[in-house]
Structure formats: C-alpha cells, structure tokens
Amino acid sequence: MYEVAVLGAGIVGVSTAINVQKKFPAAKVRLISDRFDQDTTSWGAGGVFVPEAVLIHGLSTERLRKWVKNSWEYYSSLASSENASVTGMQFVSGYCLYKNEPEIPVYAEFVNAFRKMTKNEINRLKFQEYHEDLLALGGIRQDNNYNMNNSKEDTEDILRRCQKLCPAVKGAKLDHVWTGLRPTRTPPRVESEILKLPEGNLKVVHNYGHGANGIVLSWGSSLEAADLVESCLKSTSKL
Image (cartoon, rainbow, N blue to C red; front, side):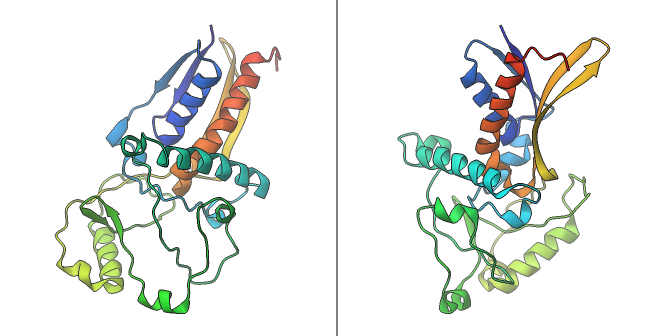
C-alpha cells in the first residue's frame, strides 16, 4: 500500500490530498500541518475566480490555461450542484478595475460571461465584496512581510482608501481585522524531485507559491501534482 504525506492544510494542500486519494483509493494519505481550517489563510480568502496572469509570472500560457480550465470546471460544477450551499460555491457578477487596460485574461473563455466595462459603468462603480451580512474591505500585498499580527497602519490605510472610493463605508461598524500570508513564488512550483537522505531517497512533489491565486488555481495545479505523484509512485528510477 502506498503512503503519501501532504504538508500544508491550506486549499492547495487539501486539494492535492484529495486528488492523490482519488488516484489511489487504497493509499494512506496523511495531511500534516501546524494550522487547519480557520487558522489558514485559505479560510478567510475571497476566492473570486479572476486568475490574473500579471500576478502569475513564469508560467507558460498553455500550463496556466490548463490550471484555470480544470479549476473552473470543478468549481462551477459544485456551484451548479445540489451541494452548492454546503461548499459555499456560487455564481456572482463583478468587475475588475485596472489603471491600464490589460490583455484579455485567460479565464475569459471559461466564465459564464465576460465583457469590457463601459465608461458609464466605470464612473458609477463602487467597490464592495459581500460575505453574508459583512462587507469585506481590502487588501494589501507586501513582499517579504511575514508578520501575522494585524497592523494598525495598514488597517487605517485600507479604510481610508475604501472610504474614499465608497463614502457609505464611513458609517459602518468595524467587525474585525484579519491578516494572512499568501506565499508567492515565480513561477508557482509544481514539479517532482528526489531528495537524497541518509535513510534513502525520498520522492517529493512540490505544489506551492500561488500567491493571491491560491484558491483559484488550487484544483488545477493539484490535478497536475497528483499526476506527478502517480509517476513517482509507479517509477522504479533510482535517481
């Protein structure tokens, strides 16, 4: 019987564990982490399906497209299923704003509807992200900042910028402040290697570094990671 250990219980780790288990139903797949559920960054992420190529450097267009396609097909199937309310998946409309007009994104061919905004829409738009009875305001990206404590300065900056964009926010009661880390690598690492240890060779499959696109790309990248695990387990190579 195969034994597989998956390190990390965020959305990428859990998705990888699920897909490895699907490939090898009889295998013993163990999820190892120092944080689970609400203690992970994935727990509080918005999870809006807008994978941005500008934030995913180093991946070929074909590979990114495959991850996006596989992720969208899985998530949209959940959102259309009888289990939608349990999974939290739902179809929502929204806008993505840029200082400069970008190229048509990879996800445009997969989502239910995609078009460019009109100037009238841009002039009237106000940013808001609803979570039940809450309005999420944020966020920030800071390279090489590993501080998990809430920053008063960052909180005030987010509030100031959001209030400038949407004055109605000024009258809202602040419910809570939340901070999470989004490990980023250029490119996201999904590959296998063999570590030579005193006890023998250890076959490893990496799947990390998705940054702000962790939830969006997790299912697609985990399918590829599971394929790599299959190759490792069935390989007799002594490299």
